[in-house]
Length: 501
Image (cartoon, rainbow, N blue to C red; front, top):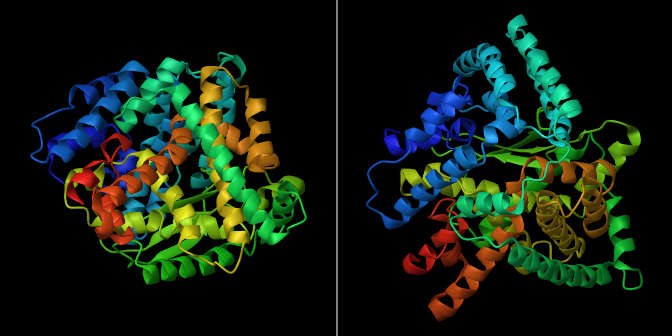
């Protein structure tokens, strides 16, 4: 890719450009997250406008979001997650290039660890103690990459220094991790190219919780008409594969959802290979991830990964963690991560018509699309004979809407971490480490809480408008094709679909 304007954006989002766009000229390179490096990166943003009005709006939105994140909020000083993602080597395990080339890139990346850690230790001076403490499992998990022969003593020393720095911050950092309502609204509004009012968004979330809870109770009655819904959900969540069988069951479901999605014609592209494995230890809070064959890579496998061990390995916590992968919810996870969710979206992004749409990603759209697909699958009859599928979809929807409520509550100071954990247990039926992990994720990455439910609601609202506007010419395949043709646009730019669909 030779577009200098996009290159400047990618220089400020190196891990995403490398893994999500497939721009492997960034292999072996760490992003300069020093104050000086960030300042240079921001100064390079901008350039000649794009001819396509949608592409121009999307690129401008991405540039504005970076200015808010780095210049106004200085996230490089407060968010250890950025620095840990900068060090993560998991991307080199995918077969996007020859083994020898990927090994060379991995060694170069490892050699850059000492300098990158020096920057992290020098730059991370605004990290609240709760954020540092919550980030320690991921920082320690980076040690997994030091078990191979190509790890040097310098890399090991750098890793130990990063962990020690976070441990120190966890002890002496500011006690409050509250971002503040104004900053939070600014962060989300710039990311999604639309004005966000937190009070309105919270009210939408509460209404969606009530709607989904009613659907969950109805689905539970189809499983057991006499038991309370909460009891039915708890019983269903207890039926799960053990850690040894989880990947095999996820693999079978992957094949099933890809076949079903293709048969229904729900998305424009259904080809490609999707392998199944486990998440790396550097991502201990992830339940499931999808890394697709990226737009600028040759044809190759995508990876759907699950996390059998979770953030804790004690037998009791392990049992609670595995309930996330119950035989009620695992089909919904496969729909979300694979088809018609992230994997299908990734196949469409590879074929997006412009560089802007292949490279730039809105988390609100990316996660909103996958979450939209969960209820879509129920509506379109996926495993219609099995009422557990609907229970799983609606339980997970409650998880997402609880994440929204907790992100707002935690970062406006209206909710403590303990209250967030309790709400995940009560509203979303998460237990033990899963509830703690969800609360920590909301604390570490406030933007993630705003991706799922608002994104789903925006897509559903757009679908209603398209149905009204297109009348008898409306169809799901037409709507989905027009939507995915935009790549992964900010939620504020979705109505291009109505103009061009």
